[in-house]
Length: 254
Image (cartoon, rainbow, N blue to C red; front, side):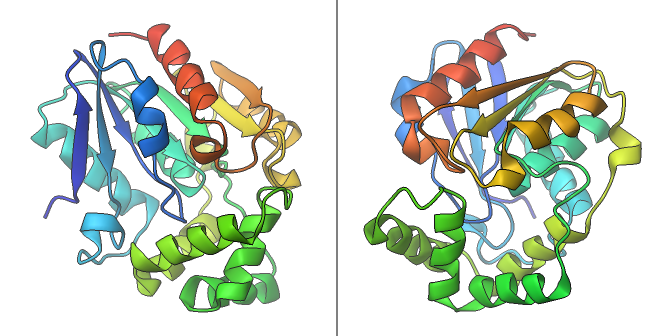
């Protein structure tokens, strides 16, 4: 079974795009994308969006196979891969597993290949937020945006998270990005990688951490910081993130 995806654009350069844990939409950046040069495939991971009815392990290995299956269905022999937050971690694994196919990788406010391990009590707290505790979920969003926005923003993101995903998948992906570590596999990977950090993201996702992880592991890593945004630049600064994405893609064309 192939997970759901939507294509956007009709260009000869192919880009597969994955969403984050909170299912943050890319719709705000689409008017600023070059549809003549690029074709984007925006995917819905298992348990999310139009793939809500598709269950699974929600592991990096399984999701990588899902992504490669989409590339096969689209007959894309080579492509660029974009991931956001938890799927920024998956994007690195896709680049590792399909080195001959992945032209470049863009990791937006990403989880590094070492994962984001947390103490058991913190994981239990996050699991409650993933299941049904809206107050905790709102706290998590506030934390990832330096509490710069009001309740309307956090409420809407939580409502969309609940509407467009199932709790089993949310918890499974939490396990993935807190327990997975494949650093030993990706060190030295020569795929060009752009890491986009938000100036107002949580401390664990800011530039210093990206330099200590991506900057040391990948010979061709480039790290940029977007001002005026936290963890969700496609919502917070859509024009800036679209420009950053396509400026990098233009340097790594087929």
